[in-house]
Length: 354
Image (cartoon, rainbow, N blue to C red; front, side, top):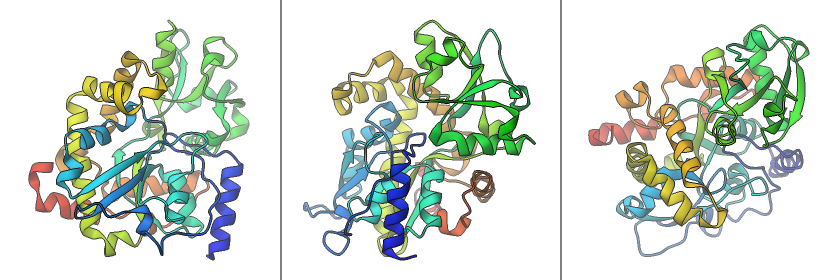
């Protein structure tokens, strides 16, 4: 894959407005700066320097682990300063940021990263904050739906970027897009409350909380419980970093593990960091942010991570991710997309992190 083709791919995706859960638009690539400062990393007297990290969305509570790692000095202990860069709908996506040499690490989704890797962008997933995606199907509590089969003949609100994954959910359950009436939606869940749709594709960490705050109660079922298992908020680095900067990747993940362990233990404090410090310009609501983080914890701290360590995906989980991606039309080899070897070394070296 030539650099020009990669740029063309990233431009095309950016133009389509592709945004994913906790992800941002992939923007056009410019001239790579990797030959200058290495992926934006600058010297600051520490072992690894100041490291630019592109968050997959705005600075809300979904990045509480990063805030703890910063506030409690875990990044410093790891030999680096981490510059947390906010994402958002109009921001450059993580894969594009790495490909242009502007950032060294970021959070994204297997969908975004898989699409990039399939087009030749040299990036790799080295861990997953969320073992399972927050994707869910939301319905009114007064008319609850419990499975994809119950969507037949109904109007389902789906944002443009999520249509491929929603279609993959239907396919995994022996259905097709023609079995439902897909109604284009954006981020406002009001059409569900207003009865304009019977159900909507949502995130368990977002729309149910927003609607409940307005007095509208909902019911949900998870994509992952119905044949479409996929991780979320994954850590993405340059592919070359896994070998050439392995100590740096390991140090970064060590700080992240400590930060997220604290975030899981104290969601109220994590929400406070988001509202009062890192996302102060966003005018976030403390109750909403606390509930967001609380809803995220079951997806982060699972029986699997309690046994093996945060972020680590097993071979079976990776295979499930690849199957789900292929169902969404993203064909990529597991070995090119995922590399858990650094995390395995980290937890082998330091059992206290598990």
